[in-house]
Length: 417
Image (cartoon, rainbow, N blue to C red; front, side, top):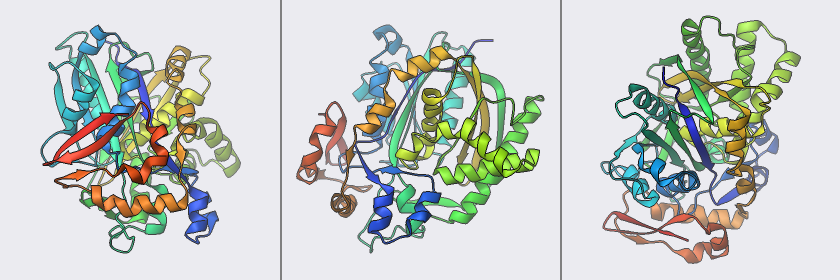
């Protein structure tokens, strides 16, 4: 069987961020509430950032590292997002153009809540396995943005504002899938998927989210257990505790992941708290390091966790990583793959942690201005010229990035800084 998996991968955590504890103090909320979320920072999208810019800024460093010959073998581009910019035109067309990819390429946009990235990955994996075009590559871009509309008193539909504001983020992951899986070799056929209809969270409008946070947690926990049990039916000897050197979870926020891991360890092994804490620190915590700094980036969260594990884990010997992906509404999947020291070295070249360190830290005053401006760049705008005076202090942090310049008759025009 052909080997398949992630040849190269990069993640993008935005240009600006907000300190979550400072946000809690500013909102006069008990900071212990935020501390339990296990999140430290959140990416805040600028008016000149959208899912297209996030996707391109994640993929450009990756595409620049491969030869023109390999670049021309990208025959499938899948953009995965729940933050659409158009009901018909695929945002993959913009991303394809600004990355300068070959025109002999399928351009697809996929929407499936936070599961979209895994759906795109599995579609790419099966395209490679089909061997209909031997040697071809697939580029999967997972990109999302949460904006707050403050025109109605700062409330975002029916979501719990005190919970939603600190956890929402923005960012993207770019995943190159091929027959040379240097970063993450997929365990072909080792998949457990599980889904059903539930109204935990949704986007009834393109820029607003609604739902039930408690129901979302219950659905997440149910799917984590059931998708792994389906995985175990296919991989008979699989053991949640011993098979996987690390576990990458879809990470809306770290506290949710910790609850899921604790639940799994208690249900499957009747593990006690000290054992669970030790196992969490060893196998799960490395995957939270980057996620704690960007907030919930929906479909890309699982890849942010995976990148964090590969960068911060120990791979003196190859290790298998178990991945749990969840999307509200709902669909979930548990799958796995193997990472080597070589794969870690290749990913470390993208300097993900350094790029997160180099973002601009927003003051609360600057953050409030961005909130007020968000409604001007929301879905469906026909014409707008981005007001760069609003972010003139941040221009230096945009260097080398693609940003949105204006919208003319619904057509988005971008520029490189």
